[in-house]
Each structure stands twice: as structure tokens, then as C-alpha cells.
Length: 544
Image 1 (cartoon, helix red, strand yellow):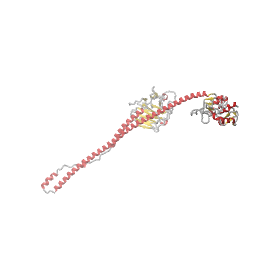
Image 2 (cartoon, one colour; image 1 turned 90 degrees about the horizontal axis):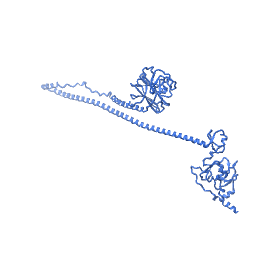
Image 3 (cartoon, helix red, strand yellow; image 1 turned 30 degrees about the vertical axis):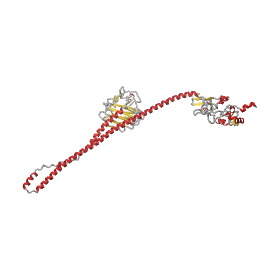
Image 4 (tube, helix red, strand yellow; image 1 turned 180 degrees about the vertical axis):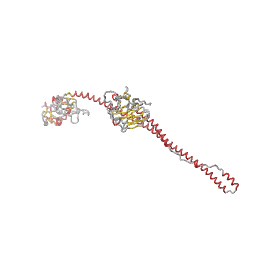
């Protein structure tokens, strides 16, 4: 009897602790294989499993076993339970994997079992180090969502990768659905995908850098736009203020001029009135003298006095004297003429400033011989073209103009602004401008915007912008050089007389959706025999 006392009075903790929670049994029950667990622990364990097995020996049961209370252990736990409690461990941190077995406060998991699909803290992992059946289980570093690592079909660990279907598979999958597919260990595919990920990361980084550059470019454009807007406002306010001052001065000059004319007319009238009043006074005095003399009966006095009445100063002939209202005809016109002269001077300054502004967008373009009509002759530097009058045998090229005597440049433009100048001196027939890339180069299409051409034409002393209908432009004598400015984004094509620094015409509201090519047409010599001079793409000279 005494030999049994240590076992009864001082049992070992392992004999009264649940293999799942590692704490003293609570409502201990036994499985058919003879192992004991807390009723709550084994119930929860089986609730989370597909198949019912013993957590200790892994014996599988066809159906969920009926659990029976182990009366002996229950009595022993009731007697010694208080002294057998397992000490608590530190709680799990937010970034750590929690123990799946802990009840109440969860502890940090130190290992995960790929057989049990459970993560264990140090205390609950103890059976895997002690029990023979559990020692065979595969332990790995703590992992979340262990159930996602198992094949749903075969209940086996997903440890291979099918390259054909690009999915994770288990060993059984390679013997069934993926039997003929190449498979590799997850680590190998991981290494491949990691390398690809590095490449993707580099590409994404490059895309980010490019977009950051785009943002900087856009911000720089906005900044420059604000500077341009401020300058435009300042220049405009300066010009308009000067014009308003000139208008105010013209108004003051007009008032002064009218007042001076009125003042002169009033003075003339006052002088005439003064003269008339003086004569009236003299005549009134004479009338009194005559009346007085008529009452004199002294013959000697009468005759002596009458003699003085016969020699008065001759009166002024007022029949030809008149006061005419001042004429204001032409006064306002002369004032407006002066204002017009001022406006013309300001317009000259503005035209000069506008031309200098567009000349800042000069581009260096050269003619493309592969596009030139067979009658055209190009200079070696690609800057000049004239009509040779004779068709040459040239290689067939889809870019070449067949019927139209036209050549386009090598360079095209799909955004922004560009400007170039063409010398037209000594020519009697020519056309030039810009054209869409998709224009018809085989036929004789009308060179209008509808057909992809924005064309300035000179023929028979007429300057025309080709449109439907055509726009005839005022022609200045001595047109020698034409400037062409295009704002692709704004849909604007403008032409300038460079020497006279005059704006000729602007096509606005254009829609550009493909590359634009500058083009030159030197004009045929068949109809204009003296039209042999070339069209020359000239460098911009802003000192002109």
C-alpha cells in the first residue's frame, strides 16, 4: 500500500495533462485508441478536420467516435488539478502566428505541423517531441492558414508546381490529373518567379520614373505657360494702355480743335457786332444833328452846319459781310487718321513680336527624295527643289507623289509647335504648307484641308489659301519668303510674309490625329515657262 502512495499523492503533471492544450484535463474523455483529452479540445480538433484521427497516434476512425468520460482521471484531476496547472507563457504579438491550441489567451506559435495542420506554442508542441507517433510529423516555421497549403482533393501538402497549368499540386496530383505535365518543386518555381518579380519591379520602377519625369515636364509646361500668360497680359496691357492714352489725347485734341474754331468764329462775330454798334452810334448822332439842324431858322448857321453834314466818312458796306458757322468737316476724320497711324505703328510692333515668337519654334527640315514627283529636282542638301520639266525614271515607291508635283520632308511632327521658312523669290507659280501622313500620293487630289492639305498657293499674281471655297488673300508686292507655323495641339496653321513681317492667313480649329509633313510644290514649268527658280528652305534670320 505504501508503494502506491507516491503515485496517488504526487502524480506527474504529464499523466493528468491534455495532449492538445497541455493543461490539466477539463472534463477528460477517452478515444477508442485509449488516449485521453479534454472534451472541448478533442471536439474542437475534430471540428476543424476533414478526417477523424487521434492527435497522438494518428489512428483514423471511419466515423466520429463517441466520447466517454474517463471517471478515474476525472477523479484524480478533481483531487490534484489545482497543483498541476501549467505556467502561462507570454502572449502572442500582432505580427506573430498564434498557437491554434491555446484556449483563452493565445500564445506565440514556435512551430507548425504539416500533418496536424496546426500551429503550436512551446508548451503545446511538447507531445511532438515526446510521443513516438507525433515525432514523425513534419514541423516547419510557424505559418498562417495551414489549411490552404493542403490539396483539397488528396489532403496532401502542396509542395510541387505544375508548369503546364501554372498551379500548385501535391504528389498524388502528379500521378492523376497532372500525370503528363512537367512539375518542379515549389522552391524552383519560387526562384523563377522571384527573378521575374525583380524584373517586374525594375520595369515598374522605370515606369514610375518615366511618369515622374512626365509630371515634371507637365509642371514645367504649366510654369512656362504661366510666365507666357503673364508676359502676354503685361504686353497687351501696355499696348492697350498706350492706345487708350492715344484715344484720350485724340479726344482732348478734338475738343481743343473744335473749341478753337468756335472761339475764332465767336471773336469774329463779336468784332463785327462791335463795328456795327459803332456805326449805329455814329449814325444815331448824325440823325440827332440832322433833326436839330432841321429846326434852325438862322440861314447862315444852317448853311454852315449843313456843309459839315455833307462830308461824313463813307459808311461800310455790310451787305457782303457775314459770319459763317465754323466747319467741322474732316475734324474727326483727321483725329481718327492720327489714331489709325498710331494703331498701325502698334500693329507693326505686334506683327514683328508675333513673328519673332513663332520663329522660336524653328525646325531643321530636309526634303525626302523618295517622295518627290519624278519631274522635281532636289539639291544634294535637301533644301531646294525646282521643276525640271521632264519626268525621270525612278524606282516605284509607295511614298512617291505620282500626279502632283510635290515633295514632303523627311521629318514629321505629331505634337507641339514647329516653324519653317521657304524662299519663293523670282517664282510665278508655287504652293507650300503641311499635309497629313495618309494623303493620297498616287492621284491628283485637291490640296484642301478636307483632303489632308493646308496649302498656300501663288499663281497668276493671286495669293490663295486652298479651301472649299478658296480664300483669296491680299497680295503685297515683293513677297519673297513665306513662314509656316503649326501648333499641332491647338489645331492652328499660320502663314507669314517674312520680309514684310505680316501675317497672311491662319487656319484655325483644325483637327490633327496623325503625323504632319511640311511639303513644297515648286509649280510646273509647262504653264509658266519662267518659273524655273527653286523653292528654298531657308534658315530663320530674326534680325530681318
